[in-house]
Length: 254
Image (cartoon, rainbow, N blue to C red; front, side, top):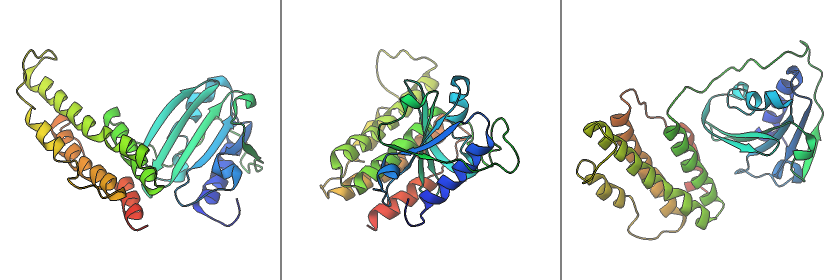
């Protein structure tokens, strides 16, 4: 992959973990890691060939726990396997595919030779960090916010705007959960509790268009409102925007 970057360091760690896991038969890189177009906003795209029964074990943030503290993730299903995109607290992104057949690999790819495992091949890897079990809405909001920032940093204002505008909607959904809890029912013939949240959501939209910064400001403000509502929905909710803060700071300093 050329000069040493976090991508190359992470790939070495993934190769070592794959070599120690008897379920993994092949390791490949694809995307910008295969074409040589990596930049500071690139994720690391890797694919592992494993038996079909191990696809979901490998396509998980827990399998990648040896890379450090994950902050959020998005799991996906696809023909021939599954995938997981993990965002770490320091802003790194890893996109891992677990596939049961090499034929399902992306067309542009490069195989990585697995090193000899000094301890022998075992079932599974000993993850150093495991993501806590949180409501899916929290991980979904974090992932959407992070992706909006990355798209914004690459000047894709159409996609970043589309993603950022999903965040106020997620806040409205939390407000609806609060209404359900307060009224003890999911059926509401008339409005009432929670109506005031719409005004707060509309206040999130920047009054003036400042291009890229408008998206970043909307993401940042939406995270604040999400915090307020989430703390009311889940009494044990703990605010954590570590991964997003790193990305926002980098995007604003570009």
